[in-house]
Image (cartoon, rainbow, N blue to C red):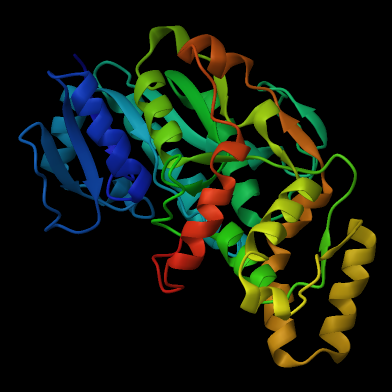
Length: 352
């Protein structure tokens, strides 16, 4: 079995991936890049290594870097700044430049380490229609700096990694089919605003869908594909694909679910009006010109996320289904359970 270096293993997804890897490969050894020197490793096969994606040489001590160069034959890169509102320079510092430093280390390893790079399906940016897994290196513009920095990181992996697989995750909205929400993100914040009657308008057109997945699906797929020889040189969409939920239906079933609560129903909260991006941009400008401070904060919070709803796309999942033998669960299978769990979860739950 190879000895691995794993980044991002202290996060919710990374912990699950590492746990599954250790279960699948009993003889596995893993160096885990951590920022906290006191991070507790519960398994003797795990070797914590203090480091930082933004530091020269990844901030790894020379003796530990030498051991990694000698031992490691595969790297699983999960760490990233996933905040949609992060400025481009900060997103690049972590997601792009951090990946570049990791590739330098991969090429220094005695075995020229294989790199499993965990990316996002939304490197597709402003593309619409069917998004093929290998859509090429040309970009069509981006909705936020996260998408752009991850796109740039992918280009580095494809050109500089000794061997690679790129695993593009869709948006994770809950832990598993139970709908449990351990970590909240932009999707959950938008739903809370909808629930509170604070979203009067959002982008959306005919054909708009919401593609979302569970942590358990993504973690299992990464653990099974990262070291799979058949996946080398492949780009894999870990997405709902044909199981994505049409935006109009999603809003309808969510509204109907909340209407079971008579107190919420008495508030007569209407469905948000769907509009194209140009009209929504006019709405945003009018809010900036004459809106009250709280409304401005709301529209700014949504600005880095909701435009994707008016850029209808469907992710091809051919490679995932071929390599895994199964696909992601349809969004319908967990959406309403997630909605129920979300409102039962304090807003202070750990945010992504």
